[in-house]
Length: 481
Ligand SMILES: [Zn+2]
Image (cartoon, rainbow, N blue to C red; front, top):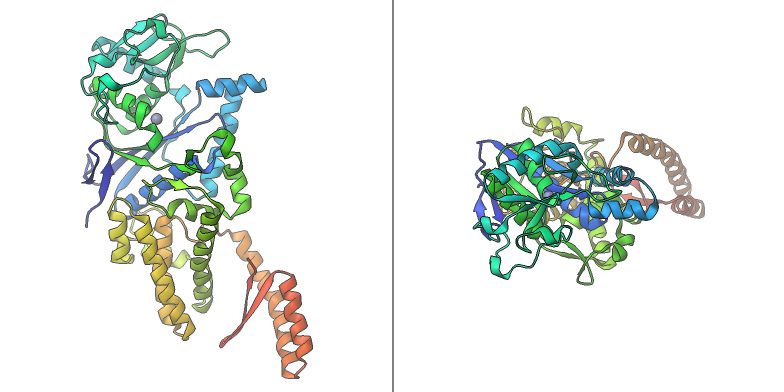
């Protein structure tokens, strides 16, 4: 089975063949850091985190580049409105994005370039475009000449004659054609500016990504990703600039669906309650990640409290099995499994492909079919629970190994970082010792037929948030959820 990926450029699912055998260069349009992330932003990070994990598990070496757009009209507006510096706004929100990615267990990119650190690369790209007759300087701006590039519109499937004017209105009077877009925006009073041969100014968003992607991944690289809302104009323009300059650029274009509220794309005013920082106080980060990955990455998610609650319940079913089976099998952590399953040189914590059920692997090979892959996880959980119910510890342990390997691929292992920490497992041991004392007293009360005392102990534990369950192997406890 080989990996197949839906490519926006061809509107088809294509077999994935990397440019260099065994190596994948992946560029993901990251945050424009004018505000902290809502779950729509972080969904893109989580979707491509699964992509990166699956590529690594199946043996590819991955170079993952996710940029930060740290200069932009919106950042300048926010800074102006709050009377602070643009770079302070960018820095603060970049930290919020990092916090969100980390909380939801996204592996860090190999490089996270910031636009303002790459002006020399942008000047170089503009130079090549001007020399080749695809761009022109006018009034301190530099524009891309859309009519000079015959394939303009191919990525988004639009015919140039039906296209709307580019939405960068600054310097509009200098454009030869309203569809021409700004590679570089001439300096305006009180705005930050960088020097170029065509005058001072600041970069256009599209130019930034072309310059950063090719700097870190080469002129031709494998996968370019981003949200569906970036196909036009952002990715159309990136492709036009880079292809017109003679670069091969991205060989596959992947786009994740959006998170919508009542059918609308989440906007700032609607989305404040869905900021990642707020959501992780409402549900646990692992549960939020489950909610965001369970839909196919290309589908939109219609946000609702009910759907979130269903996802939480589904994740807790998996987690409940993992906890009970790990207890039954006497396991304290996944460290043993990771060491056994890992390939030499594979990333720590990721399983080997051979340790995964074939149906799970087939689902992910089919354009990252996470819904089908999760169905395999839930089936293994059901089988494992059945084994536990009949006291088949070996059978349960086998399903546990399989479930943990699959969860690691999806970044959902409740026993692994960041969802389990050393501190909490130490605390669990302490609570376990204390609860054991109470349960021994309860057993003693029962032995002397003092059921009122036994029930009182159970009720006191319940009041402390500890649920006791009597099993054939003796009482066991868990924290009430
Ligand atoms: Zn971009």
